[in-house]
Image (cartoon, rainbow, N blue to C red; front, side):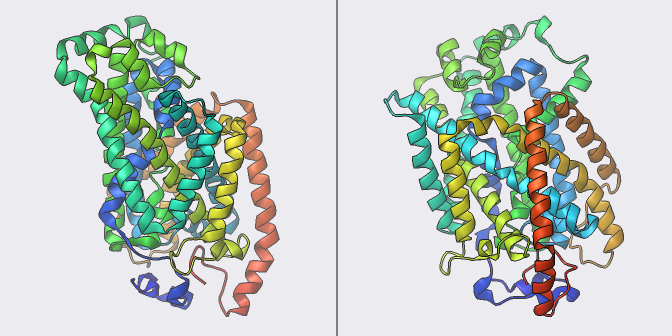
Length: 481
């Protein structure tokens, strides 16, 4: 494993800790590309995507196109940040250095906390999905509990083991989602094109938007719901076996592949399923590939349908691994940095996994399995992440000014124009989200911020005292101490 100190700037050399206490740098860089593609698509894409189509009609494809473009452009900003500050919990480090410890902690706490929703959300999807497929008289809650045990154990076994599992799940996911569009196009192209032209009549072109342009740009904010998590590279930066220069490329290639797969999947679903059925399905747990099978079975061979059904479930599992990994690494970083109880920074001596962080994630998953109302607050994840997207381009500019001497193996292209574009665009999408989410989501987010504020001030003096006793200052964030 590479020496952590070799990756630190000269003024950070004192932050090196004994190797036995560090995360294991064992994940090959190429594994992260399928991780990002399959692990971000998610089982919820197949179920709750009905809301997006009901809102956007034929603009859905353009919404996913612009969402993919947004994510890829945001990845270019991460190029430089990942190379200059290659520490797990990346956004916490970037924001704390640029905006100060309180803002950095508060925003990251909100972002990290909302990883919680991915876990019960995909447990719910997986449980409901498997019950629907099998027809067995087994409660979705029981399936959720089984999945919760299984995938927390996968993450517990260490980052390399969970990454291998993730790659297998992602390959199945990618295969199934592409079959949804390519099989009908290849087996019966004439009928596929006829349905594509008839399923979205002219009066359904963009039912809830005043124009195509504003509609597509705003709809991208909803489509990003299924791309949240492309930031997994900063979360596990200290566990990736790659040069600092390559980190940004990994994230960009994964984001590009993820956006392409989701556009293809959306194209297949919209072409096969009539708009009237999308309206009926909106907000329900009717399975989209199954609906496609019922509406146009002559377009999809049975073998393709089976693979699509399995891949939809596998995508939920892949997203679950991403969610558990992101949540536990966030807890680990804040525990290591004396922002949360230090017990969250304890690593398993063999697997190098944050044991107590995984235990808390497991408790959250079990709670979500029995209390499915928590899934209703999944939009809180999007709101918190969108707010972080507004800040990241600004943070990037500020760090260029505040830390000009930091080693930057690679720099963001089109700087600072890309930062300006991304900030304005993120604000626009955030504004659209504000106008659509229930007021209860805002109450919940305010409650989370209040909890984070209490924890910040509770640990502020404790952190300063602990670092001073070790002979360190408290001016660096997210680094091993």
